[in-house]
Image (cartoon, rainbow, N blue to C red; front, top):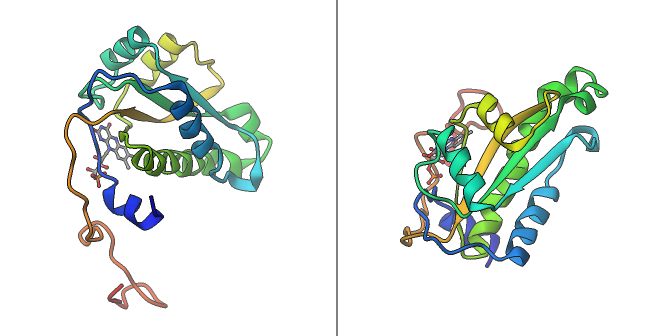
Length: 176
Ligand SMILES: Cc1cc2nc3c(=O)[nH]c(=O)nc-3n(C[C@H](O)[C@H](O)[C@H](O)COP(=O)(O)O)c2cc1C
């Protein structure tokens, strides 16, 4: 699928069928995440894939942001000890690095016929306990994934209300 078609087809998908996501597809999604940049090219991003249905059910119990039953979760995590080696820059930029990886996964999911949605509404404490995530790590975002229960129509228009576009200086509007 062409990138711009994926951009238009990407919608927040929260309802999934019970079909599992095959391992080769999961590997492609993780590859997409790993292609995303990190500040200073520093290796502090950790990617935790969860596809065990029982574990996902536990995660769902501590995650109001997960409404349906995803077949897989890809969780972006920052190793704060590793980030500290970059000083403030690592600590501040790491959520953005996680966001970049998450967006790559969202777009790759479209290309692979999956539906996906971010989830930030969860108990970090709960997540850490269920998934054995060490204290020196910060969970940044969950990407919930699966085969969509129903096809959402593509959304062609940019998010006009969300993003104001300016040219050359703040406040000078521009028709993008
Ligand atoms: C940082 C971030 C956190 C989000 N957390 C949640 C969440 O916890 N649960 C949820 O259902 N959607 C969540 N979303 C999805 C947004 O609600 C959704 O992307 C937005 O409504 C726009 O819809 P669209 O993705 O179809 O364009 C999150 C999105 C972002 C960017």
